[in-house]
Amino acid sequence: MAKPDDRSDNVQKLSKHIDNTIKNFREGQDYLSEHADEISSSEKQQIEAKNEKRLRSIEGFREEIKDEKSDQQ
Picture 1 (cartoon, helix red, strand yellow):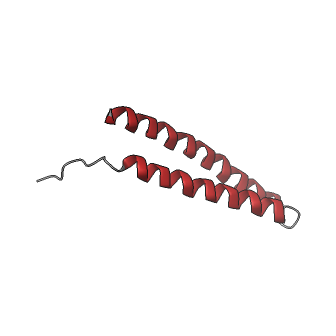
Picture 2: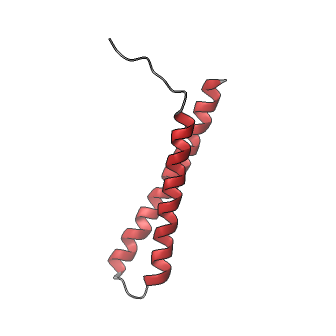
């Protein structure tokens, strides 16, 4: 028998994902700030691309939180 769908802590989990993603974004930005003149342009582009993806992920997580909150009401 399938387990019941327990979504009661989804907002909390999504908030944790946002926090972790923001942390990773900041670490990427800090790394670029500190080492921009020491790394290749390819590595710089990879970090910038990852940070762009992180920003999109954060927005997606925030939209999911809105959906979860409206579903709970």
